[in-house]
Image (cartoon, rainbow, N blue to C red; front, side, top):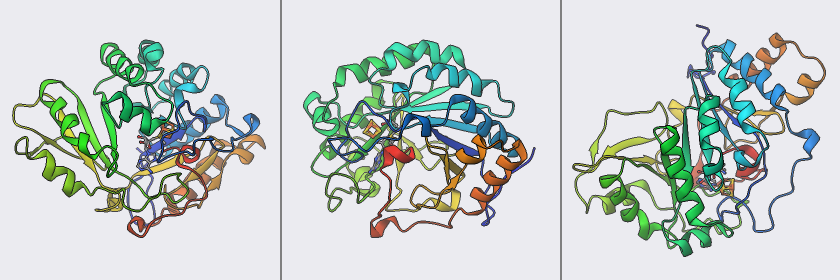
Length: 326
Ligand code: SAM
Ligand code: SF4
């Protein structure tokens, strides 16, 4: 199998594909209340164009793709894209990151089209807390989405929870407790201080070590063998059916294991989430680039991956998270 490496010899086998910058929520850490200035429809890659990029990436050794956004489920006929990606030889894992607000409607058809699993973002188990964070969301919609994903067999269903001091850090224990009785896989994520977010970055960060210490009041956290190949480290509480993962982009760098490229909805390949360097694929795609041309651009993007980021120092990105694809 062809393998793609960056200039620090890290294998690159994972492509995150943003299908839209639109979203039906306005999470305080991701988007301003009034929304963002949206990409023109004609600037957004068609499913055929995304599929061409994914095929070229698979030829180079990409084996995993994840659909994200914005909120990927607000793009029409997402199931069609999933079915197209499922046809590509070499891609053996297709997943989706979603806020699950409308997942109940689509879980079954996404599974039938070839989606393997979902990560669901959920930052509060309390109706008012959920509404405070998402500004416009309804918790019950998400809970029904989680149940629909489980019933459709989109397993393992992982829950991603961004922990913010003074906002939902008092719920870490509640989320952790849920993994005892339920086969929930909860991953706690450190808040990343994007300085273009609407919320003041200062003081919101809760380091993973602090989350762990509070969860350990429920019992000892034993490391599990599961790695998932990503940045999370997984643990289990005594007798728990589910697992607890921690992702610490700020307090502990995991850049040395970074294996991903990001494709934005408007067709830019982004070598690193935290660097504004981008390589345009849209114009070449629309001007008749061959598969080999696209592969060369993907290789160029891989070779531009920086060694690491300095997130601790705070980060300024030209784009909002929803415009990059988190
Ligand atoms: N709308 C989908 C969702 O929310 O799952 C997919 C896109 S969203 C940008 C992807 C992930 O990025 C979500 O899990 C969200 O919590 C996370 N995210 C966005 N801004 C963040 C920030 N400042 N710090 C940490 N995580 C963030
Ligand atoms: Fe939308 Fe996801 Fe950003 Fe929340 S985190 S505003 S759901 S894109």
